[in-house]
Length: 430
Ligand SMILES: [Zn+2]
Image (cartoon, rainbow, N blue to C red; front, side, top):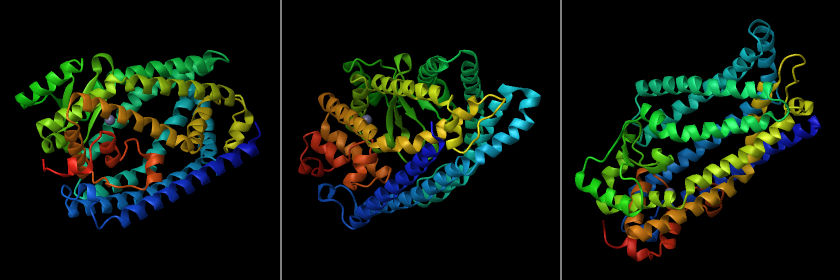
């Protein structure tokens, strides 16, 4: 691999992706600002102008924040790679850690310190996002104390789970020969399955409470719907999302016995029984249409390709030099290769964002269609409208911005696909 070609391609990918991101953000800002002063006709009777304007202001503030944090993140990326940051860090650890504690300690220290420095650099942005941006719009419920507790917990988890997994991958890379990447992929696949089982059942409860519905009549309704959809009856949970934020949501997760649908308490407070059923039917639609299995298959297939590529790159001097780090002469290069791969991939992957977004939107339409067959479509749109208000999401977006980024179709498109005319859901109040 020619290092100069790689350097140029990498720099070009960063520059092009940034330009596209800024261009799309500007388009979206202009669109939202232009529609700020009038609620779209379809929602005229249902969404107060004040809420609509708050959504516009919040969207604009988030887009501005996004531009600054993108610019910063990419500057950090260039500092790590082309400007020699990682080469410097590697040089220090190579002379301090490797001779004394050996190859594995040096490699874990390199990745550990890299992650730590990255997290510290991002901390001001997280703080700003929670305590300034979200606070300003009245969404934040996170206290400084909870923020610190979360930080400590997630750091502890990263060390306790990420550390051993990383050590396993590094050991596989060193011990299993040229086809190490197949074994590493196998370990990754196993880790994914484990994460899907333990994520919702063990990890998430460390941060939130997940409880069954208190309202017995509503619980009976959700159980009967789940039974009609062939879903185990104990899979409905209410999450105390209000601990951290006033935003609301509902989601589906897990597989096998860890399968569950989760409603935020913030959403539950806002919707009526019919709307709960409609949203639940949508989430069950994701299971019925096997969207989790599809996603996992996609991730594993993609990871197989990525590991194969890395298996080749590890052996290429040009890969290291092209990304700003001269390879080690005597010590192992595996940790370096892993880091450089993780750093170099995102600017290139950015260009396939619209492909994944469009696949996700297709899944949402499928889940909506399923919901319509099991519950009332107008209730679903009414619940969505409340979700939009709780999250201050814009009711109309720049069409190109939607096509590039949106994992969910805009509410108007979803209502149309559900066969609802504007008058039908804008009409009678809930
Ligand atoms: Zn969905």
